[in-house]
Length: 200
Image (cartoon, rainbow, N blue to C red; front, side):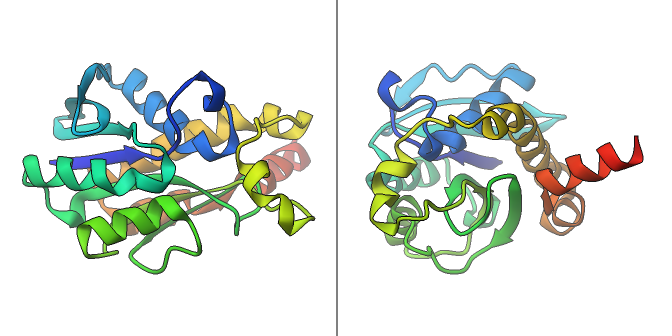
């Protein structure tokens, strides 16, 4: 079974913020595969279902971002999941908006949600789907920046495609493995969109 986690902060105040793009992708997967996220336990909202016949558990930690690992640890332990089958969707300041990158293991690059998961699991050897949100020019604004909603015309126009592509990437990981998913979905949505326009 795969445990698929979207990172974010609970509550309507944070629903459409940059930090919650992981939640947005998780909710898209839940809709696509008709998985109800109605279970409330293990400090998470979660639901079990199947992606084309493969058992999956979708979860959104409800502990706020910095403590995400407490929910992930409980879910992984209770369902006896293999850490190699843990997929985490999260925002990434080091990637420009529109970039999607897939990787397994590595550092946390200052992302407190990832740091919490690594600390709670005692390992960083899980799969991440990194969703670029870019950085503000003023580094002192980072905390406020991630808690702001997507607001530019470019962000709002591309966000549905980014969420769709990230959800497809997660599905491909489950069905075909990380290597094939990376070859197919390791991309920059902005560049892809520009190329399509040139072809037209």
